[in-house]
Structure formats: C-alpha cells, structure tokens
Length: 338
Image 1 (tube, rainbow, N blue to C red):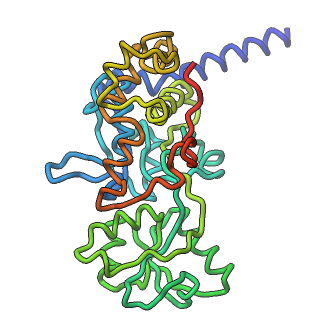
Image 2 (cartoon, rainbow, N blue to C red):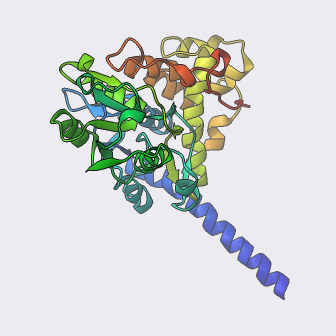
Image 3 (spheres, rainbow, N blue to C red):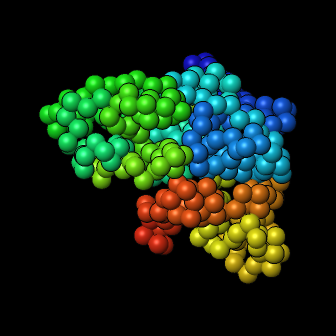
C-alpha cells in the first residue's frame, strides 16, 4: 500500500513537472510572440534605434530564439527592466526570457530559482572617471562619490573592493544606466562603476568620449547570460541550445551569408545536424528541423553578432578577449550537436 502511494505520488509529481516544463513554450506559441526582458537602454547591447526598433547584442539573442520558434525574428515584444524589476518580471511570467546583462551567481540560480542558460558575454566590473580627475587607479578613489545601480552585483562588488583596500566611498544610488550617465556627466559622482562592457557602451554615447577613461582594475568576474525560470526544463533546453547554435556556428564556419548553401551542401556531419539536414534535433526541442538555421540566418553567428553590435569596428570598440572562441584562446565553447 505504501509503495503504491509512493509511486502514485511520483507519477503525479512527474506529470506536474512535465506540465510546468512545457508551459512556457506552449504559452509563447499560443501568444504568437516571445516576451523578452531587456535593459532600459544600453547602446550596443539593447536599445531602441532612431526608428524605435530594438537592436543590440542581447536583443539578437532574443530575436534568434523567436526565429527558432516561429521562423520570424520580429515575433518579439521587448520589455525594458531595471536591476530591481528584472527578476520580478521573470518570476511573475511577465517575460518568458531575460536577456539583460545579468550576472550568473549562486544565489540567483539557487535562491531566486532561475536557470541561466549559458554565458553570452564574459565581463568584469570596472570604473570610469573623467580624465580631469587625475586618477589612474581605482585604489586612488578614497573618499570618492560613486554612481551605482541598486539591486545589482555591482553594488556588492563595490563594497567588497573598497573594504578590502581599506578606503571609503559615498554611494550615489541610481536605477538605470541612463540615470547613471546623466548623474555622472552632471558631476554628481566622481566615478561610475558597472560592467566594463557597459562603461564602454556608455562612454561611446558621450559628446567627447576621449575626456573619460576606464581605469585598469577589473574587480570581479561577471559571467553575463540569459535566464529563464526554474522548472521550465523544455524551455530552458530550447533557449540554451539556440545560444549554443550561434556559438557553434561561428566555430564551424556557418554564417548568415552561407547558411542556406551549407544546409544543402555541407559534408560536415555536425553542421548537417545543426542545420537540420540530418537527424531529429529540432523534433527533440519541439521545433521544426530549420530552427537553428533560421536563428543563424536572421542574426548571424556569435562572431557576427559581436562584431556588428559591440566589436572593435563599432563605437563601443570591444575586443573579443575572453569572448573569443576556445580555438582562439577564449572561453566560448558549445557542446556537441549530436
């Protein structure tokens, strides 16, 4: 009797877990669009252009997911979130997917019940100061006023850094990057601290970017990546492998320009599986065979997305660094498609 009850409970739990896992994908398909949480505006990563269309490095991941699910990269509604509102928006179901320069940490994964699907940018926290301040190291900032976004790992890292170096600071709390930029340029703070990529993005929008420097210290590890809710296992798998498809495509030489040709002419078995010419990978995800091909065709591979939005030829001017492919000494590495 006890054994019967035990297995009955396991069956019910399994059914509930299965229903939960499928819920987000079902909701997205029924709605006909992906609700994607992004930042309130960070040029190069996620910001509306002059026509009001969202574009950027993180936006491209959202559009790639939409292309994989619907075959249409425009089937996305972008929902701006702040450091404080992003997790509530995801937990409540207001958004299906959060792609917003968010650091993967233990507590966010375990305590807040989110699943990070991977890392799309390896970063670290830095400091930006006006050249006129005459500071060349973050350790020279004793007594400085610091613009800092609340509800972020940046806030905690800042406290740790100043405490470890036995120096003091006065925080100037901000909610958004736009507010931080405004306060910094108005002289309300001596320095602005956030992820180094965010500082480069912000500085690129200044009238005279050369009047500001990013100090050499990187005081933290900030693995940034998209995330979904715990329990949505099918949805987590889908979004994770879309990101990996973009990364693998670069390694395998698949681009937005040649993806259609390679889908029909490749002799590389892994490329054939990735692009749906062989195997049933799409079926395993609940998608059609062209899911990865559609994502790559619409956004390009990881390297194309990086170069277009934040690379060295853009005003942001970021080098690949740790975000190079593993074959080029970086950390970008996709598991095998088989």
